[in-house]
Image 1: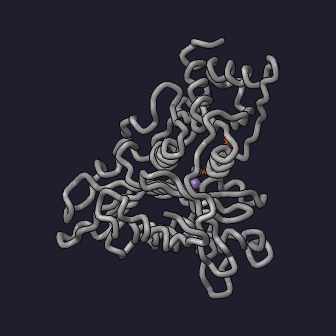
Image 2: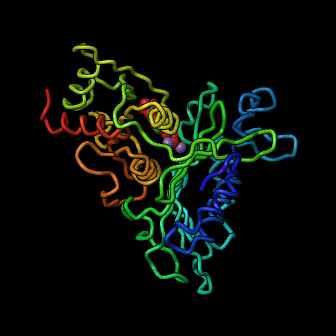
Length: 336
Ligand code: AHG
Ligand code: MN
Ligand code: MN
């Protein structure tokens, strides 16, 4: 049962018994993500000062190389999850291949696989707009104590045991699920503690916000063009409104609170869309379903897609159930 002023640390301990696998390990994993989130948050907040104190590629006052924030975030999250005897492999949008953690050691009992988009929406950094981090957690399918293989990473989203995101916005939040609903925690920057601020988050069943890069309109499939026209055309008092930040985490977060749909369809330029199944779509799909929403590639449930490669892309529609359902009807050509 949640209580007032509950911290993320307290929440993890209180709720770990509801997790069906060995709970202590997953708690430690979430704790390591919480730690990295605070470190990255600190750096993101200073981003506007980079031009004052030295641009990426320069060395800072301690003689360390300054790095682009997505590389920095990648390193911080990987470091936080390494050497804690929980994670045996990490795949990241920023790495060509997966990283193996101690799992070649036969005494190593680490069971968890993490897939991560360390900095989502990174083009927004330069203009002081919200960015995020997305993570997805699986149990390995190969035996413990053996080296991880690609098979451990190419699991259907349905097998996720946890997923979440951090949003570095006007306030910083960590939002995650372990398959028992979605909860959001807001960082109090003065004391560096996350507090439960958004218990049991849910998408409204329907919404009025659609989020899509309409600059690609002419390249979209006919079904999506028709859906966008449906949102725009006045019929009675259809109240749709368009909001697109260009950072999946931020668009998703707003739509979950207010009701809406985020779309990144395929286009004649990008036949599989842009977003990555493993680092972006699967974790957001798990969160969406846990929050009474839905996620689809236009025809199929995202979490049932069998991944074939680490960095594969997929068209993505996520948000309020009825809105995603409507897009699927248009894609099937049932609606014109
Ligand atoms: P990333 O910064 O991790 O590469 O992800 C950016 C993604 C997503 O967050 C965002 O919604 C989308 O790309 C924006 O793409 P467009 O600029 O093509 O609209
Ligand atoms: Mn991204
Ligand atoms: Mn990224």
